[in-house]
Length: 350
Image (cartoon, rainbow, N blue to C red; front, side, top):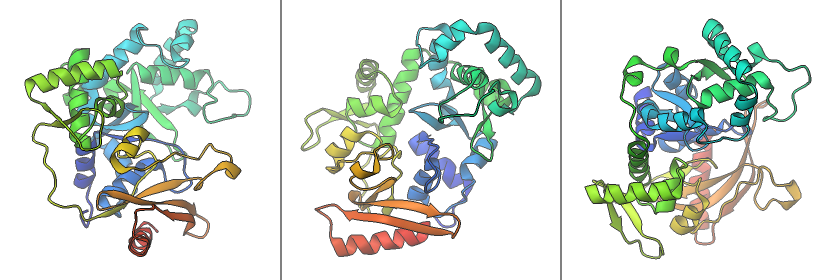
């Protein structure tokens, strides 16, 4: 961690990770803020909006909804093209387009004429909104255009809604002008970047990082191994073969504590958690309260490369207080040391 943290440090995190997942749950802070806190400590909470404004990152479906390093844009064009052609059908968006092509074209014209705009600016809703995914026709059209790359996120509003504009008006010319790699080339680069981000990973880990099909990821891995960009290794206790990126080095030592977002790339693939950290972890946001084991919004707590506990956190914004409904040490953890380090980390977060 660096002090003070600058925007350069924020971009460095995106360079290393490639991707940070976006989530709307705001019981503590927006989830996308936490990976920066884990790696940088206290920082400007407007860091990601600033990076978006400076066109250092962009939004797309990179894992789930994600912020991605701007240099990755060419490597997701295949996904946009597949959605546009109908080769890949996504949720109900492709069907919506098939049935409402004229409406989608009118929505694109509205963005062209009046963008940047939010879905609320052109809403067709006549009834009260229900759930978070309860989209009206205009929002659905905008999300289809976002999926195929015609529009992108120019930023977010104060209520966290996407602000849409034409991609050509948002992204830098240097990015738009870059050649579009083939689908196979793009997937190879995404697998390579995933390997760099994770350090050591199985084929399933590498496929999950950018949500690639496992078969496609395995083909990319074979090609990367053949060219020397990846190296196959054996990890004690792992049944599967593992891979490391060319030039990867084992750090001499790890001496740091970090609270991790439930959606942090370090822990978002649950089989990897159990294999790497012997840590069984499930998000209980959607679990009825009586059936929860640990709590509503539980963050893993890492010390020196090992997950030693988990803590349920909530922000009381009215009083400006960080609440801790529950804290739990793993069976292998030193209870006194874990409690002391956790208290220190919570004071920084508060």
